[in-house]
Length: 120
Image 1 (cartoon, rainbow, N blue to C red):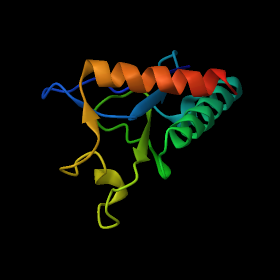
Image 2 (image 1 turned 90 degrees about the vertical axis):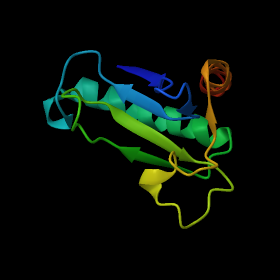
Image 3 (image 1 turned 30 degrees about the horizontal axis):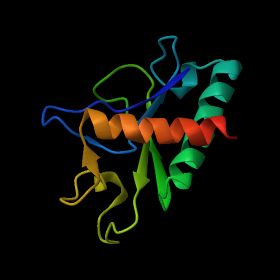
């Protein structure tokens, strides 16, 4: 299992705090996980969600769509303070004032998340 920050897209930025959790073994969906893998994915989701909350996220949304890539990857999307209530959960990263950043901002978020994770 591995957890990582979503890379910058074609515009050179990413939604800050958008994490992905995925098993190392190819698996199309949750049903294909063995018990050990399922426990590892669940634990990573909980640990990463807690770290995002320590960074200030008011809520962390979890989604696994599996539409474009036939490999299980779970998205963790933080809802940062100041995001209007009318912005739906699935569009927090599309809001025009969403927290976005390039490689250096992503690296800073990842460093902060590591501090919180290693401190637990």
